[in-house]
Image (cartoon, rainbow, N blue to C red; front, side):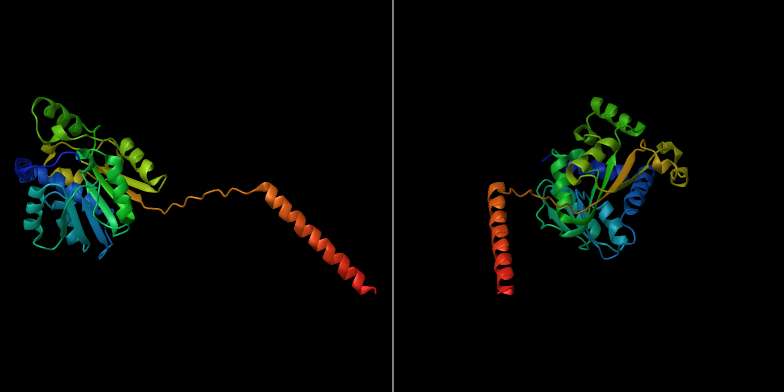
Length: 263
C-alpha cells in the first residue's frame, strides 16, 4: 500500500507550492511531463497518485479527458476543489486499479512510485489500463537536490522521510521488468538551484534536459503488445505412422490408376 498522505501532509505540500521559487520548479515539471502527452486532445488520461490535482489541472488545459486516483481522501478533497468537477476522481490504490484493461490511452505517475510499497505492481497496473503509453515523473536520487532532501529528512522527519528516491537506471529497469524492451524516451529538469530564481526557466533547457542528474526526470514508455507463443508437443511416432499410411494409400492408388489405364 505504501504511504498515504494525511491532512497535515496536504497542508505542508500546499504551503510548499505556495512559494514562488517552488512553483517555478513545478512549472518546469508540468512542462516536462506535458511534453510527452501534448498534441493529444480528447485522449483519455489517468493520473495514478493524482494528489491535490496540480497536474490534472495542467492536463485539462491541454484538452485531455482526465481521471485521477489517489489513496488519500484529504488529497482528493483538495483536487475536487481545484478541478471543480472537470475530472473523474477515485479513491484507491495504484496496486489494484478499479478499471478494465485498456480503459485509458495514457497512464501518468508523477512522484507516485516514491511512496508505494510495490512499484513493480503499480507499473504493471498502469500498463494494464493504458492502451498507448505510460509516463513516469520521479525525483532523482542522484540529483544534488535529491541528496539534500534525503539528508534533511534523516535528521528532521518530513514527507520525504517516507519516500524512496529512484535513479534513471532504476526506473528504466522497472519498466523493462513490466513492459519488456519497449521504446522509451526521457528528459530531466531542475538542474539549477532555487536561488537562480527567474533564470531557472530560461536556462533549464537542452542540452541540460539530457542530463541524468536533474532533480526531476520524466520518462515515457510505449505500450507495445507482446505475444507469447506456446510450443506444441508433437507425437512423433503417431506422426510417422500417419505419414506411412498416407504414403501406402497414395502408392496403392497410383498402381490402381496405372493398371486401369492399360487394360
